[in-house]
Image 1: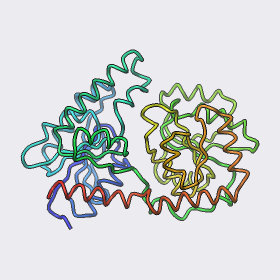
Image 2: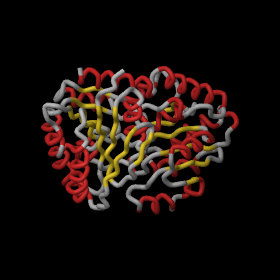
Image 3: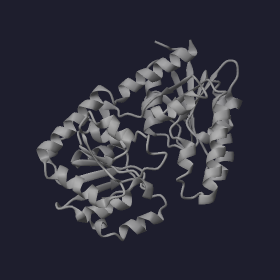
Image 4: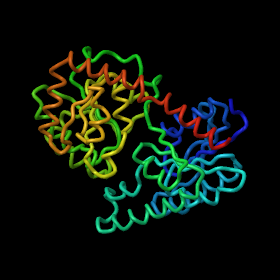
Length: 371
């Protein structure tokens, strides 16, 4: 067991209780002998799972201010830790990545998203400027990442992109923690509740989901949790006929998430076929599977290939509310089939789509880099 190395994870964007950063990566390292500090902007300093969370005060609302001032503040605190490994979780932290490097430590970049493709869908960036900014972001990322000690990628697609630039790249997929989503009731004991949990945007299919509800033959209620972006989108969706069949609870914590999943019958992941979603691995999809829920998901070729042998999902055109409604009716009117699909999905999570497997990959990656 490794006991002598210190690690400093850094984020200027995510919350201190971020599941991937704190509950998975940091907690796994801490439970395997590493001394782990997590430097977080605008957080309370505390210790969770033997992870020392260091909050950095930075009440800055503008994006430019965050990139300049917040990044500098977390950099100063992180640098003072004199860690053996610095693990960066946000693209804007690449501005300080090379300043953290010296002959005695290592610096890693954790690519949660495919930033250049993600920029192409950012509503707050003027459409004519997106392509130019996307190209600049890719050139900048490639330049810095090439000079770092390694890359942790959240999907195989992102891994393949960075592996061309930095050979020391591994995919640590954001799969569920098995112990967090267990002992849930059978689908047969539930009402016709379906669930979507996560960021709520037009590109994540919220409009078509709500439009599909009144088209269903059965009375269906959508359990909806997450923040609308932009906020004005909520007013648009709330004016749709299907909104009366929505139970919207806003952003909720992990215990509330488990409660919502425990009473729902079908999990929904109907993202639009944008460039940054086509090869993604949404954590919510695997959390639904871990809870034994059959899925209604977008008909992306990558997802079809990934799940076809699991037989746990119905694939639909995410922009077609009639297809979504038909898929919901198919699952809700066939309890036996839905239960079997949910069981197959859960079994596949137990065997391969889980954090316990990814944890071993993370530990081996750290050990090989330090050896």
